Amino acid sequence: MSAMKDIIIEHIRQEFRIRIFRAISDPEKNDFYNRLQWNRYHSIDENTELIESGICDSFELVILRAWLERQFNVDIPDEKATVGTFSTVSNIVELIEELKK
Image (cartoon, rainbow, N blue to C red; front, side, top):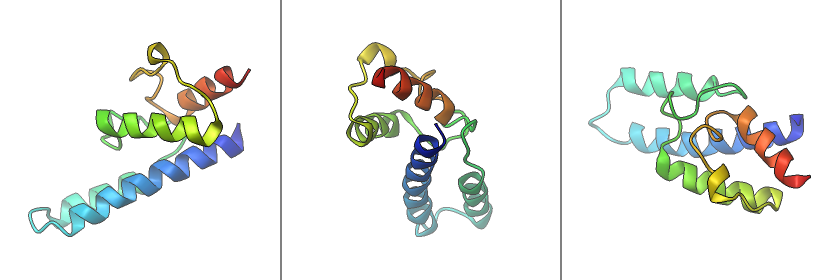
């Protein structure tokens, strides 16, 4: 689980980092917002609430699902692709492990 967890966390961090850089280049965003985003980036772990914390939105979950299917060679059924399933990296790892059995 650890290697899979680390791969997923790194992917989510990379995607979130891209969003942060876009926000930093936006003159409408203030310094406080940028610091808040960097704090979120550094605190992502297997138990971070990805949706509630604002790290992922519904569009990003669709992208994450497609990446997971390619990365781990699984098909995630629609009924398993729920907000609850994708709420934390731990939940995602459980789903992938279940699908690989």
